[in-house]
Image 1 (cartoon, rainbow, N blue to C red):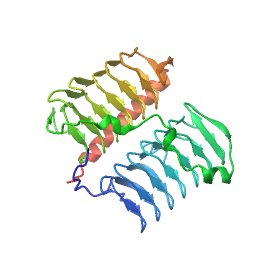
Image 2 (image 1 turned 30 degrees about the vertical axis):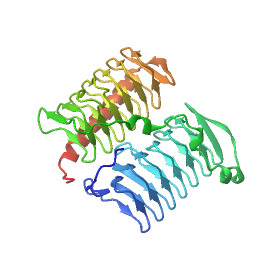
Image 3 (image 1 turned 90 degrees about the vertical axis):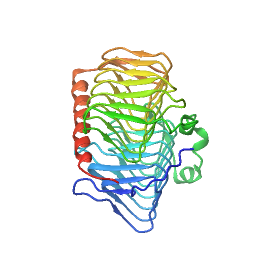
Length: 350
């Protein structure tokens, strides 16, 4: 449905870094390998996979498989990502600034967050959220949100565990139906907005300075109306999918929309809010200023997340208040994206 001729080379230089890729690595033309990334032999990278080393290093071992629209990123200059040999990262999963051992299977629509460690011969079941700093020993079977040890396994169990897909309730493809790519009107206040060259835009966009729309994003409407307003300094990160459903999606100033977020219909996200990576917002949601939706959360229709509150889970509900330390941390992350926006604008990807 979304096949689009892509003349942008899968390898993209960032600052002084150009990806190092061994022989016998298979890369889809729609995938993007960026910056400080090193991929060893016999790894296979499928459609719309984003491996973005625009800070610390991403290291990927031999004989790995990255399925469609999976995303690998780092925590700026603070923390890199390392993935061992013989790993499988299933579709629409996110590996972010963490350590994945050898022979690890990550089920689809899972999120592995900053500073976490997954030991060798472990299996992460689909739809799992591994929180920041969580550590699992080798031979772990992990599931849940947050992810917990279900039980210890052995090599026989690991080797027989070959079909994770059937156990997930999530299919990102259903959010990509009936796309009208003819409607496209992009208005900038100035030239300080970065839109990745492979972004698929099928709706009107009004973008303010220092805002950004990242690689392999899809923003569209099935009708000849509907728009996305993106405020000053706000970002929509890689592999996110927006469907306006003919209405408006409003994103205020300094808002962070994490990797692989889905917004399915009319929504309002106010200043300084954060939508955690891998989350889904149904239509008519309101995220008030300084509010936070936790990673891999499902926000049901007509949900209002009040100012300064954290909602998380499936369905998302009140978790606790945002702390002052978290506000400062989220602000730091948003400022990093403003800096990245200006750095990417200096390069040409045509």
